[in-house]
Image (cartoon, rainbow, N blue to C red):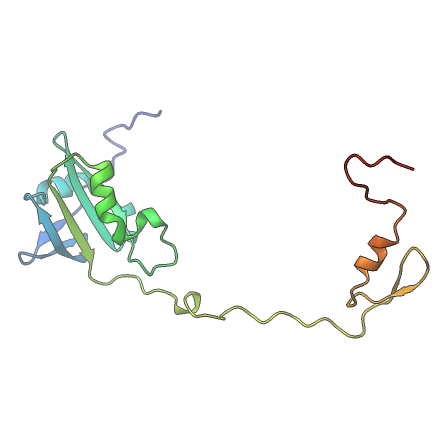
Length: 172
């Protein structure tokens, strides 16, 4: 594992508290949805925030051993979200990955990325191409004409030289 030099760490985030439940982080507006056990700490967020979190709709900050850590979540209807990154699984995350009874906070981005509704509509796929009726005529091994759109595969398989025998049956 590579050590991180203090000079390579990104600069601090700019956190501004506008009201009790609205803040900005680097100019992006968030709503403080939940502040369990006073987990929200403006100074620590400024120190630890990473711009990678900008892509998420929700940011959860939880405390463990006096360290603040972040986890990003997407809105439930976002196509790029996996099951572990959906905000509906926040409770599971808190139970499984956070210290019991820890302080935490949940920030919701004000202007969430819009979802592409084409991905959510039923039957949004392109219709399949129809096979051409002017297809090339092929010949099977008996020199009979075989049209690719007909069900000649079964006929060819049954007329093959190999016979299927049941287990225990002796070959002739």
